[in-house]
Length: 216
Image (cartoon, rainbow, N blue to C red; front, side, top):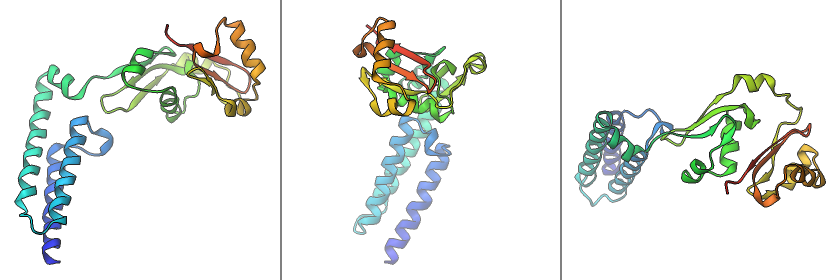
């Protein structure tokens, strides 16, 4: 038991020191390489704690190596944009002036649901309110609202819901907004398109709608 306590204490101190050396405040700021390093350190720590027969050095040496690699990578990233692009990727514009960039969405494997959740997390429900949305290298989505759109949009009591998502009707959201399938059919006819061609259709309680067609 004493051995386990000592091993756990040593590994705790070492991991804390490693994370401090890597300069990361929290998981939300982690780049892919940071997350991999953290996962490896976590596994190495558990191995030596769960297997008392193994020398502590079996975990200490790899953890120090991983910490050294991470520090080296951080320095290299600051000195070279090419290395930064390879190891961390680059920020990408997902929405520009209320228009979803479907190529970026596909490259990042984002879904319509992901886009809407990112908007709602910033208290934005109307796509027209988004001046620009940027997906950072950490995966976080930062949104700059369009001040003009925010003042010009006549907001309904019931905010917009996705009534069509990726060519499929969302009947549960039709009930929330009070829009009928017949109304949707008339809108699609008016817009000269079909259900299968619609990537996203948002509609609020007042019947205001926004349609994003799939790229051909």
